[in-house]
Length: 360
Image: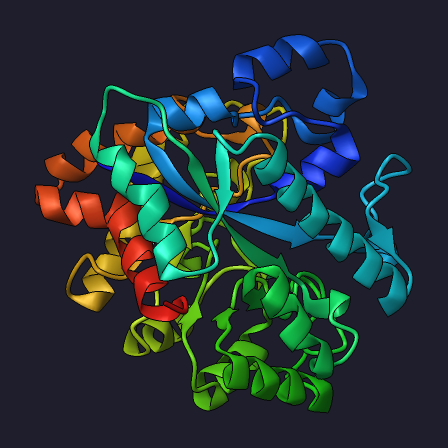
């Protein structure tokens, strides 16, 4: 099997908000959480270290994510902020959760901050008979945890390598369901990011803000977890990528991670609906759309968003855990994708991006 890289998982949020232990298998966590509110709040998990091994998931982009109070998910949601000081504390607590995970379970997880770290994690995966460390690249989703651009150097020093200015709207730009351009503060944020070398994640940014960023940001640009808006039935909104934004990312040699979430495959789907018509074939349509626009398979990957507000109950029918994303291999092959193309889509494109953008 090819190596898999997942560019978006809200692991720290789940560790702190729900007490999930990602050293366990998904099956163990499901049994442990049976009958608890966790399943009601965030579905059954699809992730765990043994499942990463079965999936050959060598690298995960682990997020720092919190919700502004106005968008709180429920009384149980403790990772909410009313001001930037609270946001800063929550994001820092999640970063500490990753540091603790890598420290307490060094045989299972390692933070990736440099190309040397990446190579140290990835090289052993050539041996398919052993278990291996999973590398964690830290991605800040929503930049309200950055109180001023002057703090960016500190976040970089702590290990954050990718930054997305928005989830909902922030003081930096418009976001999902809250349109708006880059603000003056947003332009200052991007300027500071570029000086240090952050990758900019356009996911969740309003289209206008994303267009402005494509025009002005000189550094690396990706969309860690977003689908092609034009092929989502019934879709209206600013969460997914119009073709103009996809084109801009391709022109900047960026990578787009597609999301196997039923509502992101058919916007009319709602929790409790049947999943039979929403399959990995549906997800491959998004992969193929991006590849056709690019003229090659070098700019698309996976950004599952598993455990990021949805889990087993909202994933395509044939997906039980992250290991089932390997089922994309024969589907892509049936569509004429070569073995090197499939290797690139499952993980190689993200590995190339990291080797080109991380410090040595």
